[in-house]
Image (cartoon, rainbow, N blue to C red; front, side, top):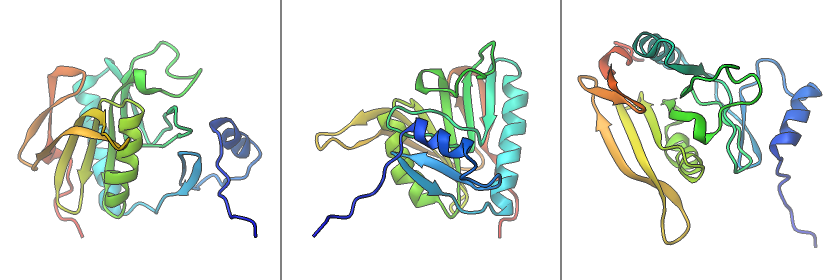
Length: 194
């Protein structure tokens, strides 16, 4: 009897599949630990939160950083997620030569409603493993910001963050890498979420 195994893809193989037209233009997919993952369709509250966050970060940071919206980042563990927002170091080529890697990134943000458990577990683990120092989840279910920092590896070899802070909509939080800039959390969450 033959054992069933999953085919895991390298980042290079994943890119070749894209070049060959394997994925549709509107497919919402990511490469996570070598697996191609289909992401759910975004609902209006998710889109509104994402747009508001981009607008606020653009005002606060201006040309001091690259603010990327739902664009890939490259992680060593054969992962190329497309976080909702990434704040990366400003680079003259605007990342034309490669996607941002952990050393380039100040902050990764996911906006979570249907994906909350996935973002808190699987994505949190890969971001911590690959050295993303600051990870935020705008939790639309509980209307709060979860701010994770200090990635670590426990004695069982699992990755996580040593620090987790919760910010309610009336909070103001410093933007990682930019201590002189603070984000008003209340400006991000949509008013009436259904």
